[in-house]
Amino acid sequence: MTTTHDRPAAVLFDLDGTLLDTPGAIAGVLQRVLEGIGRPDVPGDRVRATVGKPLGIVFAELTGLPEGHPEVTEAVARFREQFRAEVVPRAAELVFPGVPELLSRLREEGRKIAICTSKIRSSAEELLEPAGLADAFDAVVCHGMAPRGKPHPDLALLAARSVGVAPERCVVVGDAVDDMRMATAAGMRAIGVSYGVATARQLAEAGAEPVTDTVGALDRALTHPPTSPAITDRASKAGPGSAPGSAPGQVAAPAPISVRTPVPASS
Image 1 (spheres, rainbow, N blue to C red):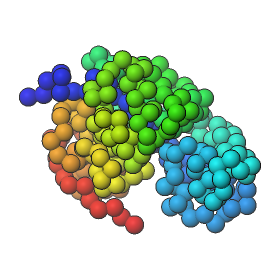
Image 2 (image 1 turned 135 degrees about the vertical axis):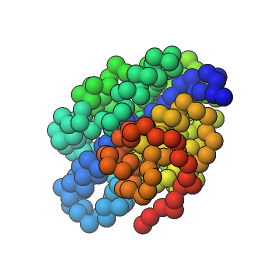
Image 3 (image 1 turned 90 degrees about the horizontal axis):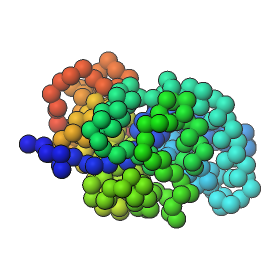
Image 4 (image 1 turned 60 degrees about the vertical axis):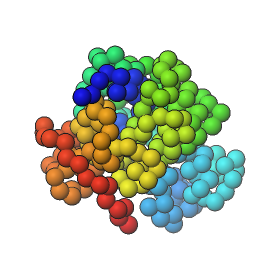
């Protein structure tokens, strides 16, 4: 039987790819910025693999230049300008179905909820406001607010302190390998969502327990202690992160929890 003590007292959410379906939009803007600075030949899979990291690190990796190089600085500025113009106005429609209801239920249960993101504070806030989620969290912890970013434990530990909950009573929810590694380093349980950037296998290997493939499955994982490697709403293989007949991350119709072992990553 699940007791209140078995449930996490605080849930620390990543933002992009976990609460909002932004990875595709982010990758598109990254690609256009690279083209604009004369680097059009970076493969799309390399670009998408960087989603969720701080922008300076992203453009340093994709250009092969030092993070402080003027070209990297220019690329970061261009990205923020284009993202603000092209993606932020669509934030409300990018919220994964079921996320507002999940956040409301967690608050009603008396649990603390926080954002723990690699975005800088201004970028996180300009996305949360039009998404209608600005007032949903007890804390918003962002890149630059702690000495080290993901996958180091600093941001998660700062989030725990910000909401007044011991690390061992917190759970990190995210779609990236660095989210899982951050949680492990901070002594926190990690729940992976496979409808974002990383595959179920990558998340599990990085420490996720369990991996969930929809917001509905995530809701159940936050209610029940982990008893299996994965909690899924999919009866068969649909697209990554999709329940049959639903958008990625969508809450499926009520159904018993089914369990599967994470499938190998596809190329």
